[in-house]
Image 1 (tube, one colour):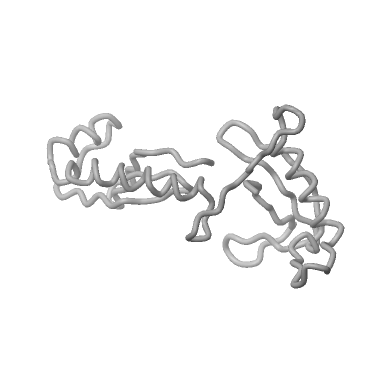
Image 2 (tube, helix red, strand yellow):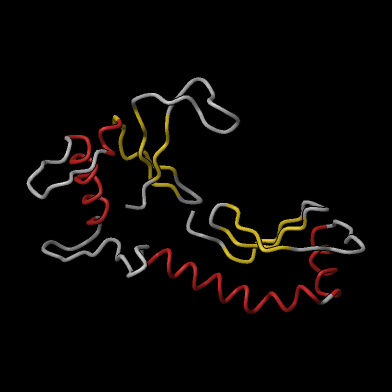
Length: 162
């Protein structure tokens, strides 16, 4: 659906996970906007196993909101395909992002063996290049870039969709 779901909680369960409450926020998130689309209880995740079995009211409400988001700006009586699913089971958006990353890696990876190129990357940041830089491909969120652990330098080559 393109929504994030965020668990609410006032305490931590482990290093990175907040304590769970029954409510979750669904939001549309990009680099500039955070739009809350609804607060739901956990029955929003209940799936039905049979065609005749009804969705939970929370799941039904989420689908109604999703349809409204999908139809925004579309003329009346339009047919909208909000997220095509590819044979791999991934959305078209994810497959296209993977193809974009493949092209970036194919084009840039040979350059990472060129010391003058690496020096220029460090020079643009004001960080001194180490004697033996060891850049590695790294995903941060859905952005792809090169990361050097020795200096904590991360150079973004492609923005993802977040």
